[in-house]
Image (cartoon, rainbow, N blue to C red; front, side):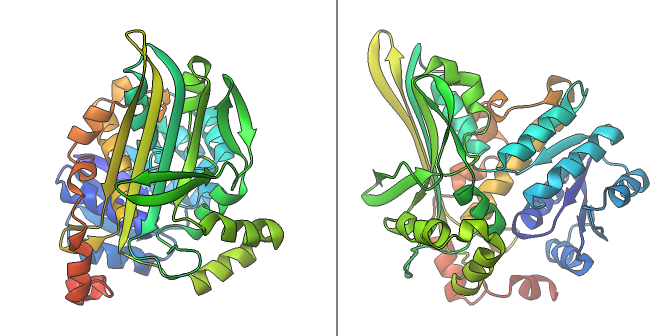
Length: 389
């Protein structure tokens, strides 16, 4: 049984810990600065191999002492991105594997430096984008003799938008603002370049629904380094319903809230509701030469909220947690195959989708589940309904 420490019991950490524990092959410690929150998650999952601890992981000395007292094989960080370099350093000192969900380019650079020469795996960017989107794109890239363009597009969207932003908060507000406000990496004319966020606006139609897409930071991951010298263009853009980008430009650029992100966070969390009724749209388009002919291949997938262990989880929770748990499972099953800094594109799409955790990407197409759970009145207070918490 693998021993894993999950840091953070929020939207994603709660499902990561549950998926691992409920597989029966993982002993999971779930740690949070709010011990009561971690305990509530543990009580809701009702798994004997899942235990909660109170721990401020930003205190690296406390984290190091905790790992000494409770030895593990790996640490999974679902903490805010700025906490991850400290966690990675402790993982290096402790000789354990490290995984995170960060989309932040600078944090990933620091983790890469920490991982240099390590004989255990350091795997940042394990979520949806970056993460699964890089794995899907890499699979399509491998089908071509010559590359022309690689387009990565992901949207985490409300199923029923009804406000001026046409958006609901489905994950970390800090992470969202970070993506909208930081420089973006792209490949242009075969060179790695920086692009401005909230620019490069385009339209995409999928299954009759119109979306817009625009530059956001971090989603390209390391794919540009891996394949950038082989293609003319490669970029990552976030998908939203039409009109969202204009409103965010007003907030972040015209009103200068990109320079006051704490205020923007308060505004968004006060005005924009959260929802469990979301949809994750994944779109990859690769064009290039196959057998001397110019062709294009696409990977398109929509994932909806799912019932897991008697509880409704949003699509962004399912896709993010499924991505990182599948990668954790593959690494811990064959640790000698993964050492030092590990890129997402080192994992193949077929092995991710065949994995017991990654399979949620293939079974999450039923859009009616979340509506039924809401109608039954079981969505709003799930922890108390299932565990008396």
